[in-house]
Image (cartoon, rainbow, N blue to C red; front, side, top):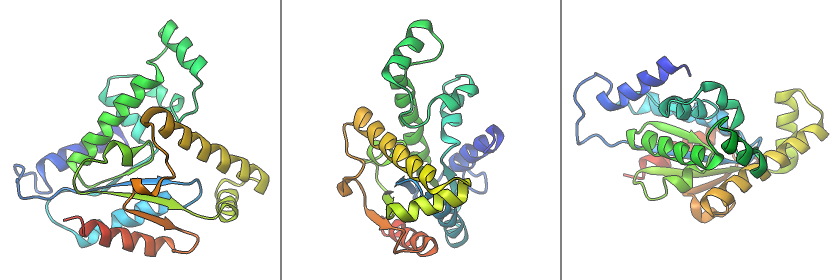
Length: 229
């Protein structure tokens, strides 16, 4: 998503689909997706956005998925260089690197970026019609009303096969990738939010995409979101 499209999303959520003044009776909902690597989060998020867009035309603007583009938005909102987006994946910076960068002023320390990311996630959830993937979204928005929290999981061997096919890598490489990504996300949530990403108590739903096809998962999330009121 480009900066222009992002601003269009913000403007549409503030103004509503017909650019009219905000109406207090409008109900704004959002979704957070926590996922194991290879569990199909991107596919399900896009399917869910399409279903919500088709079935819930209510003057609150388009449904938008925020995943890899989220860091670009964080940097944009906080007036930081966009090239830093590649420097802040979920928990891939060591404490030593963070300290050195802080000392030499190369970029803000990781804790600052995490705080700013949380602010952006809360802002997007409050605006509504946002599907937020990763970065502790379920923990950050835990106390916000009408935000559906979902954890996507799948058997490791299935996730390895999916990653191997989608990235064009060997099964051994896919296995290492899945385990590294999962551990990084677990570490990120534990370090910055003092929470266990695998704790089902953080979620309204935990869906095993090894048993539930992506299209059915998207349908279930749509129905669950409607049930939040």
